[in-house]
Image (tube, rainbow, N blue to C red; front, top):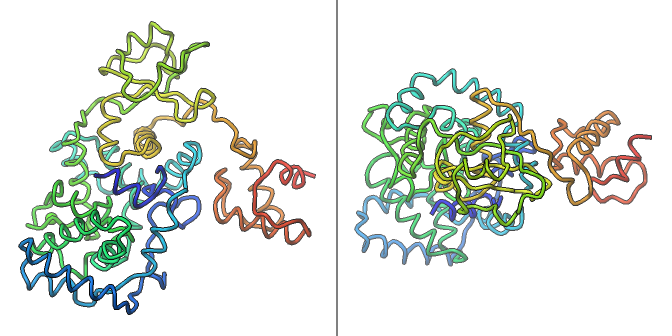
Length: 417
Ligand SMILES: [Ca+2]
């Protein structure tokens, strides 16, 4: 269910970042609010209006009161921008290295530490109730909405109705639309407050309506399960409830970075190929910090970027995060960000060069040199995003070179002269 949600939202294979990692705000981007996006304003569409009329009948047959339907659909319209986003989010898949550069950027780390401190009291209470560490909840929050800064401003009923009408994944989105109406029927929020991402993910931790109905809780005790308010308490508790129901075990790691012995048979690696940490140790697998990995139960070895990238020993909590969003990069992103928020260090293993043969240090050098040359990449995180490509194009144009926007070693050599 959530994997469905995610492939919908991010296609990161998916970050938001969550999500959308991969939003519109360059390097730090997760889910980006679309307030200024003209495509997120309703336009006239007769086919859509006909569809809404027939949907109202189906919703009534499902037991949604007429008053709820009428108020929910007041002002609802077809949003062309939603379809545009749905069509353009398919192929985009970041490497784990890029994903982690975004998911655990300096900015996301410092904001995460501040969020942990600012919300320490509710987070401690939530941790005590659901048995999910405050840092883990905060990491989900950071990836899903940049700690509440980017919860999305798209009217959810319009977005879901547009996607249900469009039909590419009509049945799924009609189910979400019915669930959204049930939320309104329950009185947890009003239609005009029900905003979210273009794909209908709502609140600080970006719940789709069916997940909300299943897992959302009223933790601050005001009688409403309010994930739309500025106060993140209900959202964070709802996320903890979700992870708890997905099997999260407090005090156990999601995974541990490891080193593999020379000649390790890669056929032994992969999710679901479990052994005890002692059995892995007997095969020569060691924690990257040295020594055998403590026994947290059955573990698999994961090689997200193959044998030339970092290796992880993953445990049951990995699967709990995967129930939230079944994308390997997302799960490692949440896990690693939570480790960093708890004081852990960066990934130690090397990553392989990208398809252009560039390592992260090369990409960062490229960004620094472009910026120094007057073509601002707005940071040097080593992730080649829209801003870096624009800077490359500007540089190429100014130098009379073919304008490709591509980061290459030839371009770096040129900049190094
Ligand atoms: Ca509440």
